[in-house]
Amino acid sequence: MRAVVERVSRARALVKGKVAGEIGAGLVVLLGVGREDSSATAEGMAERVVHLRIFNDEHGKMNRSLVDTGGAVLAVSQFTLYGDARGQRRPSFLQAAPAEKGKALYEEFVRALGSLGIRVETGVFQAHMLIELVNDGPVTILLDSDKTF
Image (cartoon, rainbow, N blue to C red; front, top):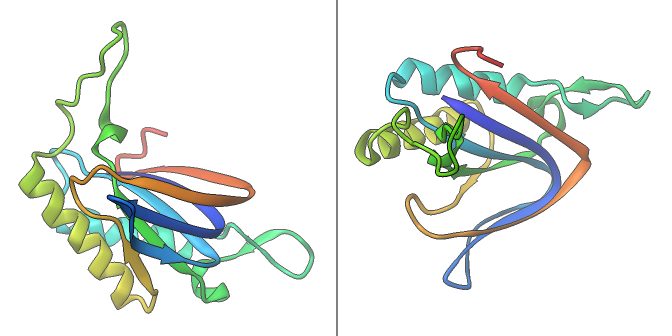
């Protein structure tokens, strides 16, 4: 599982001009599900996101997590995080999970965030979306369950 985590002051996902999900301060998580991922992977990624210390403390140091700040998550499925464009111009998505598995594990990730006490808003799986966000910092972190980066 791969995630692009962005600290935001606000964000929303639009589908056909209508708001699907919207948050104030918190995190936007663009989530890609890989072929080898499992329920345990989804739960582990949710734990990592919730406890990632990328919010400033009273001294301006990134020492606080989403749990500490009470922020929300806008979770957006993004299979293109598994795009492999090495040596070619058109990315291959062979490492991305098939749609049915991707949807199930994306939903499991969302449920896991909620069970950790985080308010979660979502985009719409497999829909064309416009994601509007104000990156705070800017702070953007890449996470990979296989720890390749």
